[in-house]
Length: 97
Image (cartoon, rainbow, N blue to C red):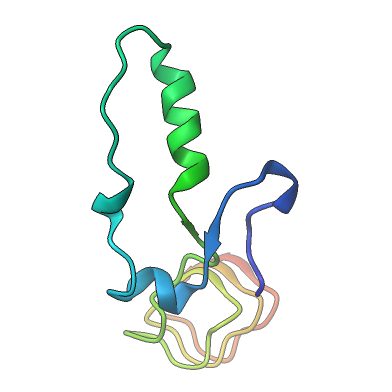
């Protein structure tokens, strides 16, 4: 799996298709707030438990053939492109519109 999250930090990562699916329920990770512990410590612990999306894209809902793109939507036939909307046949691009 290709992801934007560094494995050194120990975050759980779900594939893009699994993250967008109904295979998991975010409410399963709910916790009681502990007023005796720091808010940020609790937030950090929670963020390590809840899976993060591997690559932020629309998983083929409005794009076609853009599986290895980050933050791309309404695009077609793009590869290793990030932060782009409404593109076609673009490769190795960043911040395109």
